[in-house]
Image (cartoon, one colour):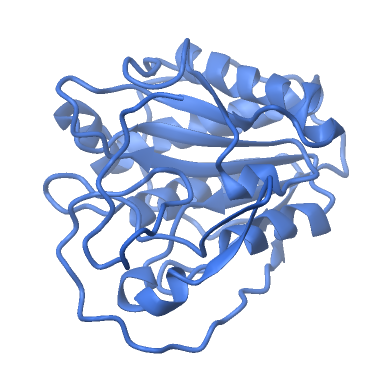
Length: 283
């Protein structure tokens, strides 16, 4: 663990912790009001909604052919409606290892206000479209970018119930440390079950290697060599399937923010993540 994390969005209740450490200085929302907790039911898709067209100047390495019948769960971090439902997203839920954590958080944003939830939703759609095009069954943990949640325990359950061959949670970080930049891939450690052992660490390594080959730099402020062993992330702790969480970069870094904000940059992230998942499934 490293000490550098981000400031929780002011609208959250005191003491709330984010799913991934993703948080930022997002303008405060209205005071918390009681809301009814909702559960998002995942929908299996064979093709993802088409993202905005773009091109990529970075071409990830080609993956071997995929064996049919594979299932991948994509977990776009946070959700667009979280900020307006503080009572719901601050409700404590199981997070594994005897811990409880807030249901979810709002996530972070670039200094110009481009939100993490919008970035993760767009990248996940692009990844899903690429995977579905290879005959891989894709399941999303949320179906739009205007809802609330689902909670971290429900996100893990979606992957477990789908009997996923791989679960990839897509996020972006928001460190305000000077010069902080680069991606890292988190995995549950020490493992709580067999899937969190070799399968998850191998998935993390393949994602790390493919992103690096695709032109992305590993984090210079958290983890080591692009990998981060974590015991505090509920979505990973509660998974019984091979699962990782990708912090694609630091949204507070000007260069990375520019890349994340552009359609071309998001396609570069998506192409590398999709290639990594394909390589893992074929290995």
